[in-house]
Length: 341
Ligand code: 5AD
Ligand code: FES
Picture 1 (cartoon, rainbow, N blue to C red):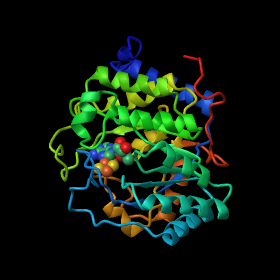
Picture 2 (picture 1 turned 30 degrees about the horizontal axis):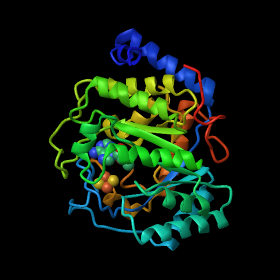
Picture 3 (picture 1 turned 45 degrees about the vertical axis):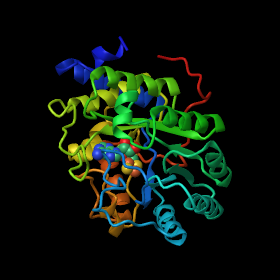
C-alpha cells in the first residue's frame, strides 16, 4: 500500500516515466503480440440489480434477449472464420437456473467444432459445482470482477451479493484450475485512493491469470447515474491504475477494456501503450448491441463482428503491435506462486 499510493499521485514527467516503465514491463513479460479475445454478449437477462449497471433487472430500457445455442454457435463460427481471435468470450447478465445446463451444452458444442479455440465464460456468481460442470464441458477460463475490494462500498452497490461471496467464487475457480480473471471499476462513487490501492493489491494477492479494470461510467438509467466518477477531474488516474496494475502483476493478461474508449476516443490504444497487452473486440451480432449497454458511450454499438475484427487489426497495425497467434492462454508458469516485485 505504501508503495502504491505514491505512484497513484505522480504527474508530469514522472507520469510519463511510469507509463514508459509499465510499457517496458509489459514488453518484457508479455511480448509485443496482442492476444485477441472476441466477446459475444449472448444474453442481457439479469436477475441482479447492481446499482451501476445498464442491464440491471429493474432497468426497463433494454429489450431483453437470449441468443439461442444455434445463434451462439453461428457467432463463434464467424469469430473462428475471421481468424483473428484465438479466444471467444461468452458473457451475459447473471441469470442462474435452467440456462446453466444450456451453457454446458454450448461449451461442449463449441469445443467439438473448434477444439483449438479457447473459451472464456463470464456470467457471474455460481456454485463451485456449476463451475466444475462447465469446466468439464470445455470452459478454459472465467472472468468475474470483484468490482471493489471495499466490503461496504461493495454492499452498497450490490443488493444481491456480498464481497465475501464474490471472492469465494474466485477462490473456487482458481482451486478448480480454471484460468481466472478478476478486476474492478476505477472511480466508483465513494472510492478513495486507498481503496484503489487496495483493489490493485487484491489483484496481486489473487495472482489472477487475467485482470480487467476500467473506468466507472455513470449510467443515467441507473440509481447512481448522477454520481460522477471519483476521478472525473483527473482521468489520468485510469491510466495510472493500468500502469501500476502491470508493475505489480507483470505476467497477467491485462486487456485494454472497452470502457477506456467510452472516456477517450483512443482510450484502448493508450491503455495498450501503458501496461495492457490484450484486446477484446465485440463480436455480438450487431442488432443486439444496443441492448447490452452497461454504460453510455460504449463503443462499437453500430458496428458488427466483421467491422470490429477489421478495426482491431487496423488499430494494432497503427501501434506497431502484431496480433498474437494461438489461444493466448495464461502466461503464468506456476499458479499462485510468483515471487517477483
Ligand atoms: N461503468 C463501467 N463499467 C461497468 N460495468 C458495469 N457497469 C458499468 C459502468 N456503469 C462493468 C463491471 C462488470 C463488467 C462486465 O462491466 O465491472 O463486471
Ligand atoms: Fe447484472 Fe450488473 S446488473 S451484472
